[in-house]
Length: 288
Image (cartoon, rainbow, N blue to C red; front, side, top):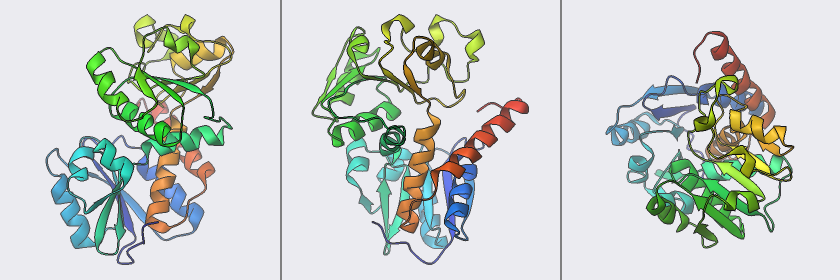
């Protein structure tokens, strides 16, 4: 566990754009659950300025950083130490202190595993199909591989990207569409369906055809706006168990706080804060 640097009680998220981020609401609720006097803010840092943000972290003694697009790869090249998952992915979403050194971590994939564990979903002997090969998919493939998932199938429109992503886990291979039907857990790690009202969704707003899914599957969508995507609605309609993307977001934030503070916060108020923020945006027409 990384040691907390005692100089500051400020944490922040850096990204661009970052005004839409749910991180401030989630982390403030987490800090409150731990009873610590920490603040959390969002800094819009333009592309190419991640190194400047880390320099400011060092100068100002900022106690922890969350990192979102477009800075994850750049931060991986700017920290002093990379944890194994961050090194494999060349992607950092968390920066913490270990003495005077900055440590880069990736908690995204581990956040999904924690979300599934909270739902009582075991990976033992499960066949997993992951739709997508971008950053989110790669973090999930890496995490599932580290957790010992025995059979991981990667599906992507661009085969060479799927092949590259599959190298992240020894048990991963490139699959075909029909592999979705044989999987025990199916995960949408693409942006297909994001921001689409399920009532208005068409076939192009689903990451795969609904008739490929089975009633005895676990169907996971990493999208959290809307919470119930058209794909999850279709899966639920045939009796499949569904998991939305907000659990991954909240659990990865809890893992970030564990690195900063040495304690994991209470998940329940963090999720409640995220849901309240999403609901407020919907009322105001603000979306994600």
